[in-house]
Length: 175
Image (cartoon, rainbow, N blue to C red; front, side, top):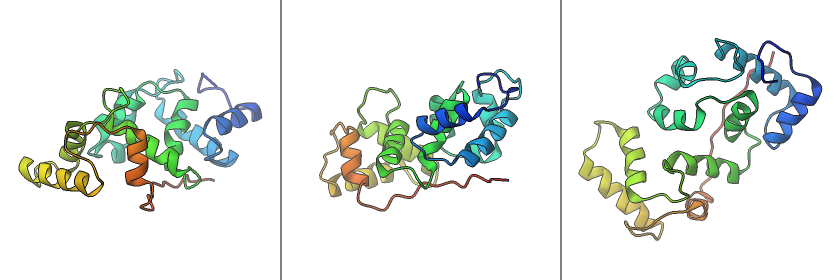
């Protein structure tokens, strides 16, 4: 499974399926493997940041640089694990854990006001001022019962996002 020139065995498929908590069917895993092999241009068994950026939809995503931190040099199993948060079969917990990782840029298990502001800045670009961003974020935090100086942990994200019908889904085309 490390070398993309090899084919997936039934054991590989089941192992990947277990790794991603059955977020994908076996047929979807085979389709994802084919896509992985297309992205792995040098056939080394890993996808680099540059190879991810070759996907136009990814390259134009305002959070692409944050996501690259999570993506660089993924093997197939890790690639499917990353994508599993976008599966309709992923649990709300898996989706929120993924979102938390996007915000927790220094991987210390805590998200600060500035971390949140950085993501909001990435998403809004020049469309709103820094003062407007800070006001919006302060208001959202206060609505959720937090102060501007709060350090949010995963359980806080669960509390904030856990009841809002969060949808993060992507369809895996299956031949």
